[in-house]
Amino acid sequence: MASELERPIPETFCIQAPKAWELYAYGVVRTLVNVLNRTAWRVTVIGAEKLPAGPFILAPVHRSNLDTLFVASLTKRRLRFMGKDGVWKYRMSGAIFSALGGFPVHRGIADREAIRRCNLVLAGGEPLVLFPEGTRKSGPIVEGLFEGAAYIAIKGKVPIVPVGIGGSERAWAKNRKMPRFTKVVLVVGDPIYPDVDGNGGRVSRSSLKAFSERLSYSLQALFDKAQAILDLD
Image (cartoon, rainbow, N blue to C red):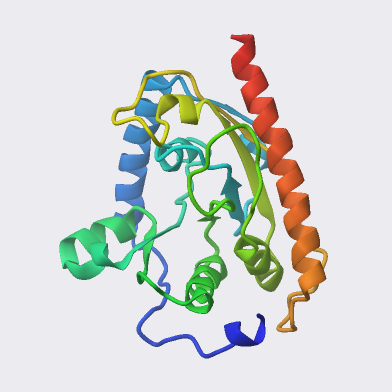
């Protein structure tokens, strides 16, 4: 796996320091989203002080399309997300989504290129949002995590911050056409630091498995806590 991820970075993609207007635009949109979160879904955040100051991977559970909006309430820092490259086909839409933290990943892209792009984001000092479950799931059990987040954390020597989101599936489940305005709770866990030196060496399968298991255990505990808080209301 590691050898496939060591090829040169394509010259067609690079991460540049955010421009002042981009940060301003992100701040305005993030403020509006935060107001929406707190009024429509009464979003409550617990443990935001645990977020590191430098680059890190934010790893929430994923039960709703609204999860991307909800995590914006965690920090004023610009969060980076992967997006379909079609958004960047037009200069205006590409500029807007870049300003709001998105960066392009081609449909059908090889995993190695997507991972390289994530590494570039972290090398630029910004937090990166990755959903370890890969896609929206349903139910109270966290399982089947992809190892990409663990690999990126080990290679980049950055922590993963797990986040449990309670109530987002009830707010907008996969089988519903419209969202419901119900309470949502986000619980931030302690950063999980990789034990393996990611200084250019190969990442062993056992290291990936162990790190992913730590993440899975933490996510489940945080998810359960967020759901328990909702049940108390």
